Length: 478
Image 1 (cartoon, rainbow, N blue to C red):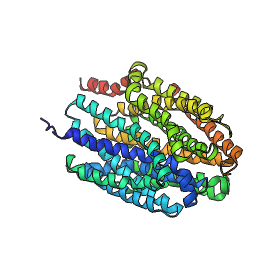
Image 2: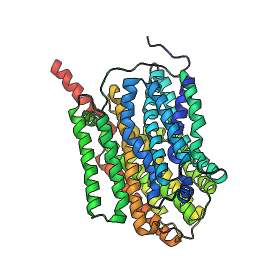
Image 3: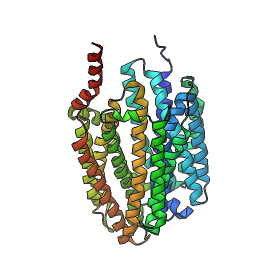
Image 4: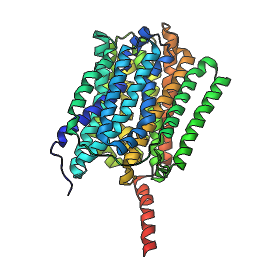
């Protein structure tokens, strides 16, 4: 009989707090971006690296973090992740140059990539004894994500407006120290023997970083220039190397056989396009509010609260019920199409626009689409995986969302810059650039919605496909 940890609910608070902080780290910087741009000398095109440095490190190393958690022990990796996150936060807060800030953000991303998968492993260890308790714990842990996003938007505005932007990073130091002190509540489980695919992790992270760098630089040096072509070719070669490594190693980060799981491929494609549409919307909406409408940091953060509040309410209370009625395929497809409608509405922003008329209704429609699609896509990606590969499936779908976010933001920043978003102070040009980004983000979301509705298997079809090998084995034994 499995031993039940009497402190498991207290431990869940520690794990949920970690999830809260990791997600908050991606949202808290949004309203601080213009102030960081002024103080550190980022160009309009380079500013995205404050976000993408974190996302590339986080997304590129998530699978490695999960593997290290299995081999070295989840609590040890959880603690190591917090030490790395604290170190990155100190560097980011103390940065005096743009690239020092980018380095700090990348180190934060490495910490997040260690924390997130080890936290999920620890949660499963604590609650796997009772499916009902596990479901309740997963719901509470999942609710910490939209709560962290909402808190990040609000606190980013508070710190930037009334203290200074470094405080959005300083806050992680006392919270991290307190979390480390509380990790004695977590189960100490030893690791196991096995190999670590460091080369594969390095190849996928470097390939993603080089692709983003090439896309960011392309408007300046030319899309057809030798430099851009060589960089994109190098990125493709590194990503191809990653897949070759996964195919040849005995213990790879991502066994390629997992892609035979029904709906895993289509769900991950949906998550990639969801990230590529949603994150640029959030990024450029922050810039529109501050650089065109003239909002301060606090007012900008407050303006985004209705959107993040709607996300939190739907994701925690409504989406699961709707999915039970309509299924993942319909939810993901319709959610992406609703997101596309909201983005298309946002593309009508004006240089002399207002929050109530130009931003609020369209942002709520976009948030509704995001809340309809995100959790069903996560569940569709994981539902067909066998229990021993559930963690891997979770890591893959989180990785594809982060990869989509990074590449989407890079590409749409290039689009926005080419349409005038680099001309600070020129409100019509800025608005034209942001509008172009919203239009292309809408196109990405619409393509994702249509592909999902046309390609993804329904729940019944996927279940039949999943059961077919089992039936075949039974007939063979008979």
